[in-house]
Amino acid sequence: MQPLWLRPFEGYTGSHIIVIWNEWAFDYHGYSKRTDLIAHYFKRARQRWPGWNAELTLLPRNVLISEQKSKEIKGLWLREPDQFLHNALPRAERYLDRFGPPPGI
Image (tube, rainbow, N blue to C red; front, side, top):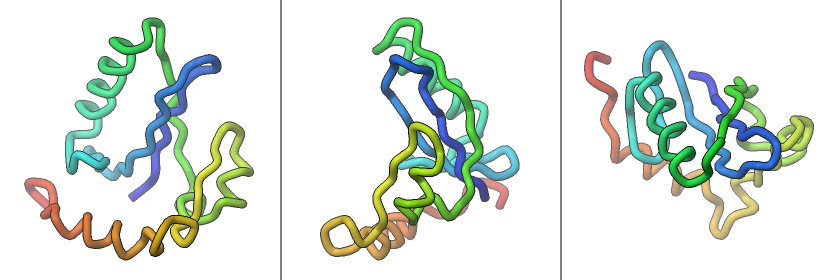
């Protein structure tokens, strides 16, 4: 599994990070076909922000839990799990447990 950043072009907002592998993707909605999720996100962003576009950037996995490492990537600045109230990692793991594997896996 690999984190993928939908990084908006300069002057736009609407950043989003998903996890991808094979033809699948996962975000807060659950599992989707990778191409469908990306196409849907672009469509919705362009409805909100005409002219919106983004670069698809693969991220090293360790940037998701390291503020310092995330700052090494231009335009990215993520908080660490323990910087959230009550450490976000156990809460995130419980959230993931709500989703079974995608069809066919």
